[in-house]
Image 1 (tube, helix red, strand yellow):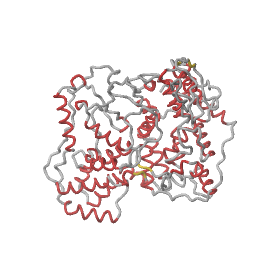
Image 2 (cartoon, helix red, strand yellow):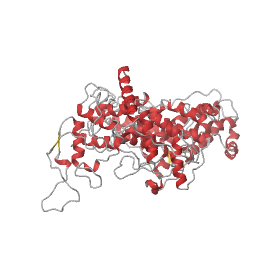
Image 3 (cartoon, rainbow, N blue to C red):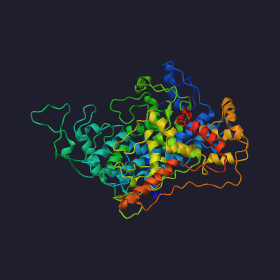
Image 4 (tube, helix red, strand yellow):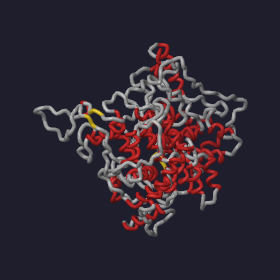
Length: 623
């Protein structure tokens, strides 16, 4: 980031703070409920009014596992646990929050969220076929740099840079659709304003206060010039046919000029955005309307998104559709939004407020359909949650100490085709770097077997291979497929296998008592030491084989996972290419080579222990 740009945005933030000084701030109410910060005062006052009681605090280690998952997307390591426990009890939670917010994992975890919300949908095969480009790397760098969020939104809407190499211009990509900027207008409005325009795509929205002209006038602003309504974006009126339930106000071919459709949110654009070279004036206006201080909706929507992510349900529900919603705690929402703005639109500042609160640190509660009503959302504790797909897969790799070892996200390793035909998305190290494998046409030579084994687990737990539409809430309800694929699939088996690249193999080879092995294993997988009964049972299982577990003179065995890069788009229809890929898939299904340095009797029993822990509800659920 250039120092001039940083200084310009800081100057803007200072001007916004000065404007807010003339606006009264919400006053935190008094409460007799537990209070860690002012967030709890708003929650506690409502609990008292409803004569409800909060749940108890989580234990220290439950808190650490939860907050580590919520900030970095993975479970804590044994080293992190020891550092945490070494701090005095009075300050260990605060210090843990500070360390985690400074972690690189902060960026990894947020990218996955905004890929869904912004419908990032790059294709490694024919990326111009109704896809976006990959703007994931720009997102990652923005969060890694802790870019002020108003600046992030502005740069996204300006859509400048590279389409294929990870710049925000990739957000503009939406080929083979009849009105690409209409799709982007809906995404932007839902993400940052809580205004759902999707139903206005082909007619006036019947259940929302938006006309089709509203959507297309915003699309025209993003387009940089007037747009013409496609015939395919309207409901045809057949003479003599049944009159539709919806109103069709625009005609095919009608020209719609650029216009801001949400005057109730911001009547005029704030022209105080720092200058940007090359930005379309109308896109610049959209950004100014959204992030300008006159628009109070923007910081409230972002504050609500952060709250929902950490507490499991929003102060406003649905989080991306506020047309008929009302906040359960309007003063708290205003307090969080104001804190967000005065911090310079610092997402970490907002996260710290929520994570440091008593309500976040309480034991979870079950979620019922009634909690969609603002009248009964009291937040006695966070909603009980399962890990996200990305949290689960990344945590499995972290616990086992194994790398992804995936192929490149690339179907043309020969590199003889332009990026507009084939994207090379690189070799993934975290789940957000995966992408749709584009192999639904039954072409075995185009398979990426290792990547497929990871994508299968991600998909079972709610990850979307194709993000044609934005989503704030995933369809990730518990299902038999989740249980089956984790227990019997390639990835789960690989994580439990004691191969020579496993952290558990290295641990078992150390000269330590069995009790220490069990303690370290539980810390790696479940972030806690084993209980008395667990220790007794597992000691009985492993002790007969533990003294003779190590095999002297045995050599390290490496599992061969190299992908044959001779197979590429140019030859994927050949029989030889198909046989090569089928052989690679066969080797993958055989699993990692088990270590020769541990006796088979001990290794197999220890693998059973690991398998049981990985497949336990305790592993997949957030405390």
